[in-house]
Image (tube, rainbow, N blue to C red; front, side):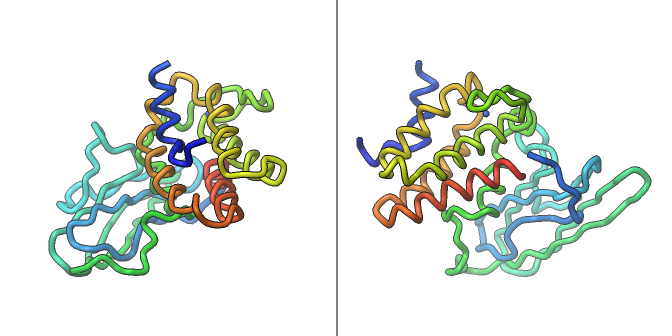
Length: 228
């Protein structure tokens, strides 16, 4: 099997022919440091039942609901400096003001793992998928339990990662993933294409390394999707 056959390619083929909530301390998540002209996704971590909103007067934030999902913002700055981001969280009668500082540098920070499979990166990449698509309730075809489509996709990654010893190869993992995701994604495959591109790019850098690292990436993706 061609090792370039990844998740995004699989989704393209599909177009032609799937959490448990936890109380969270309200916060703004995203990178602390970026380069000039480097877009950065920000999101609101809110307590269960709370609603939140970014400052709509900040010229460095794009929160246009026509293309940015609720609870997210796209930060962009063309001038170096320290930028203060403000948001508000409302839970019943409690109002909390949240803030985050982003340092914009003249060059890309060398230690920022923009393309690596990490929990934070997977969470940021999820922001390109509409919330209603991620939270759509489905019956997971793997175990016949009801969950969100995001959780079902995560369970697919996790199960295949945990079965890696029996599967035996990276090519085998990819084949199992493409087969299992077919019923899990269903007719929502196009909505996940941008997320899949990010995942596929990050996974491609691991294909020539130890299988253990590739398996670890599957498990990180799965656990993040299930618990986010």
